Amino acid sequence: MASGKPSRPSVHRLTASRLLRKGKLWIVPAVMTGLVSLLLSLLYMGGILTPTGSLHRLPVAVVDEDTGKPLPGQTASLGAQATRSVLASTQGGEVRWLKLTRAQAQERLDTGRIYGALVIPADFTDTVGALPTSRAAKRPTLTVLTNPGVGSLASSLASQITQRAAHQISLSVGKQLSASPAVRGESASTRVLIADPVEVRTAVGHPIGAHSGLGLSAFYYALLLVLSGFIGGNIIHNTVDSALGYADSEIGPWHSRRPTVPISRTQMLVLKMVMTAGLSLLTTSLIMLATIGVLGMDAPHPGLLWIFSYCATLAVGLGVQAINAAFGTLGQLVSMFVFIAFALPSSGATVPLEAVPGFYRFLGAFEPMRQLASGVRAILYFDARADAGLDRGWQMIAIGFAVALIFGFTATRYYDRRGLSRMVPRPA
Image (cartoon, rainbow, N blue to C red; front, side, top):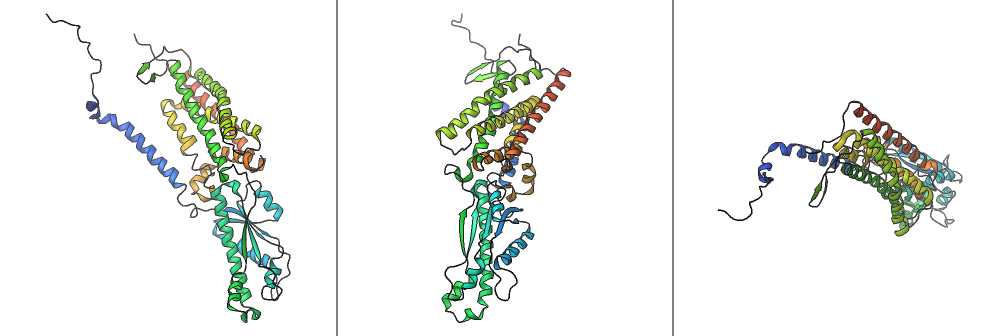
């Protein structure tokens, strides 16, 4: 007679090697991961590879302050001639040159509506006219104004464009001077100087704080808000489902399934949205504590920034709950594309929308990241001015609230009316 305790039959009858041979098990994950990898690659890399080749109406100003009289044989000052030449170069479509006064240019620099400016000074014609004579006391100058508040790449592109324009003006002026009989008898070094006589100076048109990441802090802060709403919304969705018995709970080796709580889809969405509103208060406060209190990010309007941040995070979180309620498990992937995959390359915060292909400019018209980044940028860099993007940010947050509520509750009420309950019967 055998001794000892009887062996316990194993409930784990299948092995991984046996399941790996089942082709159907591979199909769905292969298709899903392949599509996600392909789309993310096309979206992210497609928006950054050719910023100069994709330029479309980059807004840059030319300011003519030249008050000098026309040189002999000419009908207009050199400033007016240079301005006409610069404006004519707009026809290529890459740059949108705007003829503005100095006050108008400063106003648009201070609101981020232009990315740079080329300033022709009041004494430009006079200093150029004095070069071939003994009256020359200094070189003529042109000033390039940058706008770091619109982002380092946008400001850099505008600076390159304005410097090229200034160089072309210098060569044009030099060509006119070199044709003068008074110059032909000068020394070789003087003729070289006169061939390219204009000095180009660079200055900051609208300064920002030293703790602003060279104009990138607005983008990364807005990204924090979007990620907080997206990740927080999904955490709430998953943990509430587990707590109410609609999903398994698994932590390490421990697995459990709680009894299913009878609740309609609509009431479940109400629960998750209210929790999202409550917990967004916590996440917003912690984001500001970390970025401003600990890291010292420049934030001249902390109260307004907190209110905007909370509303932005909440709008994203509500959108996540609505999408999850409508699409179920697939909702987390859908919301990732809505709030992350499509949003980041069309935000215009790292690469300006004027330097990306047209598809991204189309997305930027309604994708939430673009609107939130513009609002944050206005608060951080442009004195919280409404016309710097803050008004559009508030409008899109309000639209986001409305769309999330309408879409989410329309879907859940439809499912409830059709009797499509999420109730899971308890095991016997």
